[in-house]
Length: 408
Ligand SMILES: *Cc1c(COP(=O)(O)O)cnc(C)c1O
Image 1 (tube, rainbow, N blue to C red):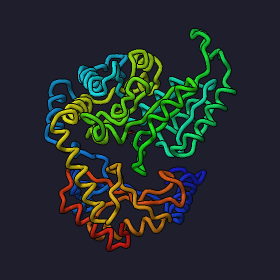
Image 2: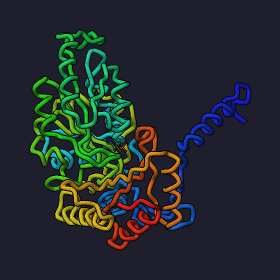
Image 3: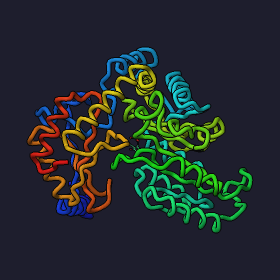
């Protein structure tokens, strides 16, 4: 046993036992099929309502062909970080496609959305600055904000009054001119960076983007919006909620992932040319990490092009039909706002795991989302629908939810 001298494994095993007792122990389940509505898990076929592959692109023939072509033309690996010699054509083509998609001059791709958050926030702010985040933002943003060393404040979820109070406080505490550590960089003002998501990952609700923009402009703050769960789904051609609200030129930093509706893997930041040039120089997760493989970039580009095409419109229409179908079957009042993320609240962690297990016995996979992904005592089942689900599969889900006691 490794670490028997100092009880290394024994210590970790006792921590794991504690997680299990609290209903918080998590384990990997091997999936032997592609991502799709039907997955093979531990030798069983399960109906999958857990994926963020909202448009069913992860196993789409067009994306697979693009990945295979990229391997044939550009090889399997990237060789280095992009500033060294790994800035391969597929990365540039992906970024051109993304800039066009977003209607912005610049985009930089990263190996993941997590890395995009950590690299970008760490590059833009430091200990002389203030970062203000919504209470429910994704862990990648929380971690990035902490790592940046900036003063961190959290505003109540979507609460503009709370945010206004914090911004007023930030205006008072900021020093007008700060000299930052690196002597090569000129003295600059302290900055305030507000960060939120356009669609929240575990609740599926939307941020009040227009009001947020007005408020941050009043205080001269910068705004970063994570469109991880809206890219591909909302707005003309699936550009996202910022574009839909007509706010493209008023949000300094747009973030997205290529691993959800886009169907591949990776993350990106979109904005001005200055933002992108600066990140190429200063985002450590970009500078010091090997470029993603050509196949990932090529698949993502194919995903973006499909999303922006009439075929993308058809997929979005199918997705919203499935969402409306499930709501009707569960007797839910049709909401003015549709989301592919449908949280079914449970509360207690152990109970959420029991319900997820009962659903699995019905042949349905819905994950029990628990702390630390959501707050303690706020465990839930997180149902996600995709354009690839059939009407009949949605019916099966509604029936199973009712049988395990989770009617609408
Ligand atoms: C998934 C997710 C990320 C991270 O993106 P990855 O590409 O999976 O690393 C960031 N923000 C939100 C809101 C997410 O849901």
